[in-house]
Image (cartoon, rainbow, N blue to C red; front, side, top):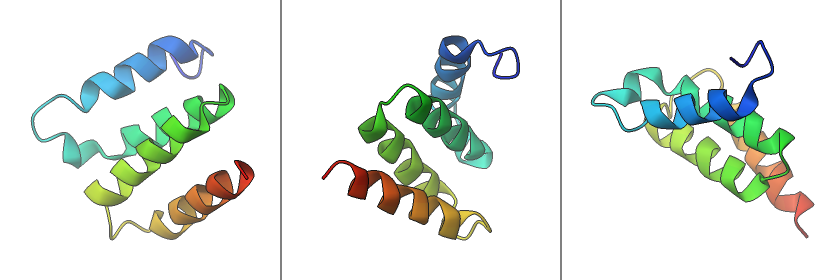
Length: 78
């Protein structure tokens, strides 16, 4: 769906995964959701998805980049 630019459907699927048991194993869905939310200028929601990612995958190799994205989004609202 994401590749087909069906962003609303991809976002819904990513958020649905979060409701499943053991969803922490697929924390990357939060990155997908955050990216889509950023494209839609829903930056506060994107930050929330990024924070969920960091909660579920704090030792990820992507953690530093995700934290930087949060910092940039939070700075842009001022």
